[in-house]
Length: 336
Image 1 (cartoon, rainbow, N blue to C red):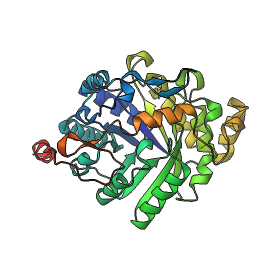
Image 2: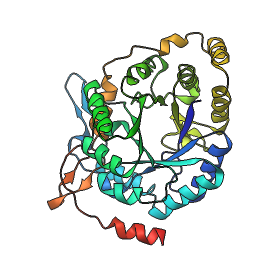
Image 3: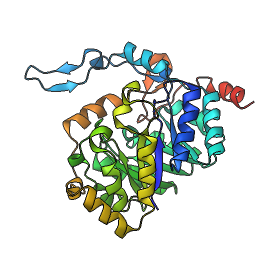
Image 4: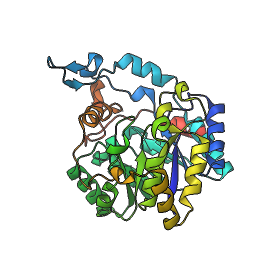
């Protein structure tokens, strides 16, 4: 049966009490995994082309505008400490769901991995599917990697699969479209079939617009045999968090949970009734990224990095040493 991964993302607004209520709501509504993000605003990088963006005379956008100071200030209000990580793990266990995280910078991997995760499973963001040094280091600390493959070229996916296979690690690939939100007709769900050439566990990380499209794409993915479906989740109004428009509510999560326990015949009957044009979500097994996805890849792949010597960032795909930031002491304090 499909496993449901609930992504809390930044919908907690940096509020631990809200964080706890979200975990309980996700558990009560049928989540199997509840996922946080191990983001630290101190790891945000400054890259000049994103300060004002780059647009050609004909209107073609070459780089999006995402100024460093504004992004760092926004994320600093959402930082979760290592104590918050421990709170998250404990609350997930209290409510009977598996805690999961995504790690965004290599220098934090040993510290985050050293926390008491009940399963040695980690989620890898799309923008790091092709970061082979990071995948190697994650594989040193975790037994199962769930890797999103959006914003990743086919050959990069092949290389990631080759590496993880050579390391003898269990890994799962999730198809996703890295537009926020993406339209139903760009879901391209048949790509899950292509991903099965590399691993027998595949799924769909869904960024469709909730108010417009509900959970249609997630239901079709489940009907098609997805082993995992991931959706952003909120208990707030959609305008109260940055990720609100792509985040489902507890009621929608419960509806998705009820759908996944149906037989395949029942699922297909319901899909054909609710989504008559469901085949438009299939697309083709292989595809090129859209211009929006390429722009997002350009920005998000490198948004976070590890501090290197002489103040030079070490990006997740660079096979270079980085500095010990002293977070080990912070972890020991958090677990004391």
